[in-house]
Length: 125
Image (cartoon, rainbow, N blue to C red; front, side):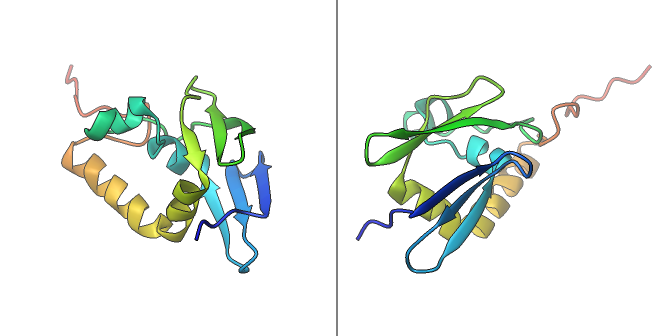
């Protein structure tokens, strides 16, 4: 059974998408989390996911309905091609901690960073 939120709120101040469900479950999904786990082909890489780096300060700029099955999220880095289905949003919310830890581990393993000002290359003068 598909879980469809009955409350959807873009919290601009905290930069998170807030979802509420009839079951009483509520999720607050940060912009960075939503951006690095975008369901778009650009991020998912047609089955070969592309690790997103330097997205720590990305901001959500818009949320709009995509039919009756998804949300289209827009971010200030120009990314707006992912359609977040109800099922995908529920999965992100219900597995948020696990998915976030997996992402952080992928960054560590790739010697990459959340902060766009950091680089794996150190220049010594």
